[in-house]
Each structure stands twice: as C-alpha cells, then as structure tokens.
Image 1 (tube, rainbow, N blue to C red):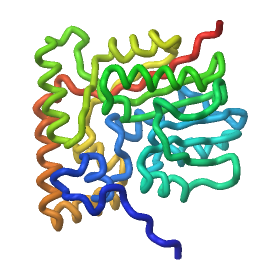
Image 2 (image 1 turned 90 degrees about the vertical axis):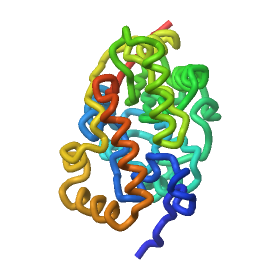
Image 3 (image 1 turned 90 degrees about the horizontal axis):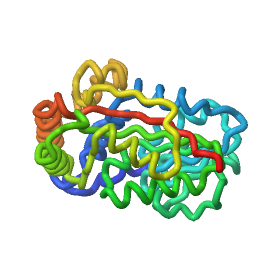
Image 4 (image 1 turned 45 degrees about the vertical axis):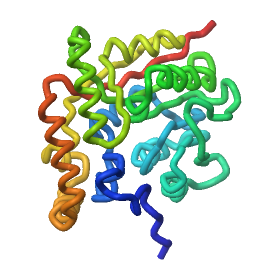
Length: 268
C-alpha cells in the first residue's frame, strides 16, 4: 500500500486555511468554480491529442491533470507552487514526459514556445490585476504560435456592474475564503486574453454552485458527497467555514458565476 500523502495546509488552523484547501481536506475533489462540467467543456475546446505538449498551471489536487492524461498527450508538465500539492500530482504521473515542477506560473522557467497547450483553473482569480497579466503573458511566451490556452475562473457579472458592488464582492469573497481573490467580469477576462496576443475561440459560463448539494453530487458522486457530509458533521470548525463561504456565494448568486475561455495564440 502506498504511503498516504500529506494534504496541503492540513496542520494549519482551519479558521485561517484557504477555502479550497478546507474543502479538499473534507474530501472534495472538484474545486473549480464551474465544477466538472465546465472543466470538461474547457478540455473539449482545447482538443488535447497525442501530439500535444501540455503545460498546466496550478494543478492543485490533480483532478484535471488526470482527465488531461487520459488523452495521452506527448508530454505533460505541471507548475505548482505548493510542495504538498505537487507531491500529490506526481503520484499520478508516469514516465519521463510527465512531470510536476514546483514554481510560479508567472515565471515558469520553461523555454519559449515549448507548449502547444497551456491551461489553468481557479488560480488567476486569486491574483492581483498585474499578476493576472503576468501569468497570461507567460502562457503566451511558452506557447508556440497557434497554441491554445484555456482558463476556468470565477467571474462577476454583468459587465456593467457598479464598480463599488464589484469591489464589495471581491472583498467578501476574499474574507470568506481566507485568501486574496479578485474575480473580474467576463469582458475583463476576455480583454486580458486579447491584450496578450490571444484570439478567443470558445467561451462558456456556469452558475457558481460549488457548494450546492446538486452540483456536489454531480461533481463528487453520491458516495463522495456522503463522505463530505460526514466530515462536515464531525468537524465543526470546517463546517463553520463552509457555511460562511456558502452564505457569501448565495448572497451574491446573481453576480457570481464561473467562466471558461479557450483562446489561440495569434500567429505573427
């Protein structure tokens, strides 16, 4: 039997642990805002095949990594800043052409034009506007011309939302997940892509139902959902965190959504 790998932040006070790691410790495997369905739409639009050289930013627990590897790309490289998460991802990898490096998405250290596909999920949301731009620019740098880039992030709608309301949502989401978060509007996500030399080829949105029972059953299966429910009953500190997050998500349910964009790097 293989040794159980440590969960990121598992020894940290639950009240200060970033929300996505609280959910992971409770047994949640799908941690993306649009759930499994939006992840699968992104992967379908990326059209990963055995000729592709894939780079994934911030694979986290490796859920999407495994879906990607099922498509047998020529190579797969993950860039993950959390050492424990990187160890979990490495446990899924086989062979010299599959690797997970500890590092930052804005400065991967990879060669220019090394990838045909780059994607990342639920990670740009956690960055400042300037860092979002740096990461998207890095995706463009490591992609060959005509390469595809996919994102799956939290967004705030409508595009015409009052700036003060948008700031309030960003503040309350950051407070409840105990991590800086700066989701932006669909138009702003698209503009970031355009500004870095991408042409948008695919767009899809979904409700932000990450903590709703129906979505959780769809994402985790009945047994997975029951495991999470049991853990919530026996872990009051984590339960309080989840209740707090769900309260904020419900408060802004008309304004919070998930978005995936797939874009092509323009050819010179």
